[in-house]
Length: 73
Image 1 (tube, helix red, strand yellow):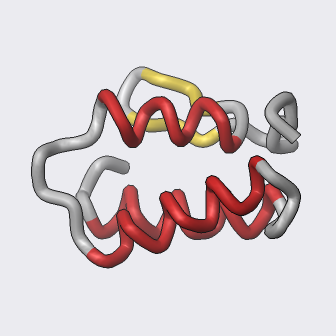
Image 2 (cartoon, helix red, strand yellow):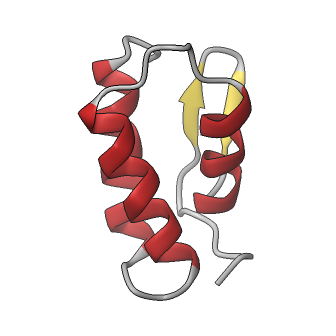
Image 3 (cartoon, helix red, strand yellow):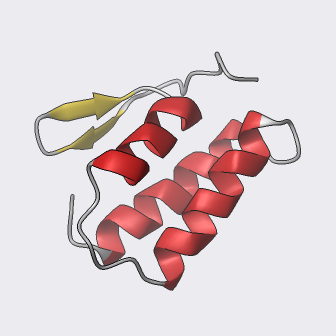
């Protein structure tokens, strides 16, 4: 499931995030120091999508919610 891509990338600043693996990499290296509940939910859902326990669409939804909560989009 590591190569799963979303139908439409998520825009974060000047970056396009194409799938759960890229989203997780961004969350680990490009995220501000403040990590809230939405961040934790998104990270958990993304990891679950990467190993097939959740769908990529669920991961995208939670990633976008975390971006909104952190005011990154």
